[in-house]
Image (tube, rainbow, N blue to C red; front, top):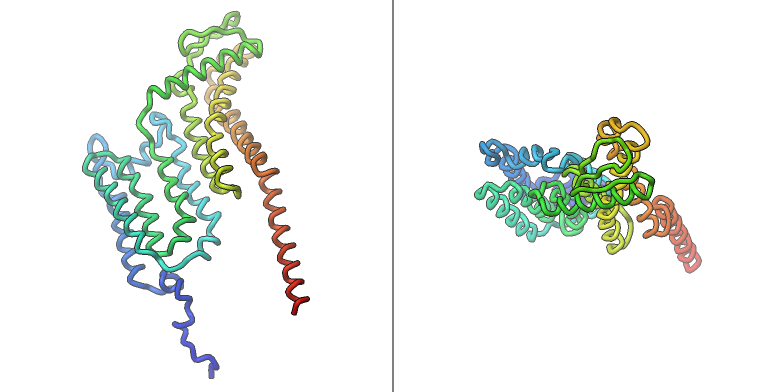
Length: 335
């Protein structure tokens, strides 16, 4: 006979049972499943948006990740979100507790966003309500600790929503990129002069190059902001240091884009002008801008943390082990 008369049902962790883990179906879990099905239906299968009203909220979002909106990088958002959640999956799993009905307020708020966007034909508003719905569901089912751990990844969706075109901001970026490229080229021996956002050679025989909308750096800036936000979330630093790391994407994007444009002028002046204006122009972002920007993010991270991130993390792990060992010895001696 089993000396412990406790039944298998009683041995289940109450917090896990209440949250619906361990194969236990509770009214909360059933209601959550029904509501999730409704969310998927309305966001993925009910068309409302676009000129012919044939796009659902999600299909509009996916279709908006194109060069015209400067949000081609939005396609990476889902993978970044999955990566952030996976990086904390052990901590999330161990933090499951009794759910909170406060989550229903967030769900209601998200539904209001969806309804407002649905009625006014504004897909950005409808998609903007999705993180409130998902986060509220997490809070309702698994409690505050899990909700806090998943808040940033879920609301990361906002970074992937294309904003309306800010022509004035883009124009300022074009003028700034033109000025930096002009002065930078002159410092490196390529004499140029400008006419608006067009840079012309003084001595070279290459054709004038215009700093168009795509070369203003807005695409690079938005993409780098996405990467720096995820990087800051994963960094094991104090909050203010994470904010600094995130905001550093703005000057890095401007400097990196300027270096890319300057490299085009250098190659046009001292090399093949046609190759510089075509092949290198198309590939310099991948081969120059992103390696430079990501490397500088690593440098800033290392300065803020006092060393390379992986070495600092290793030191922290060793320190925890040492402290734990000393505490264990002290406990043994006292007993």
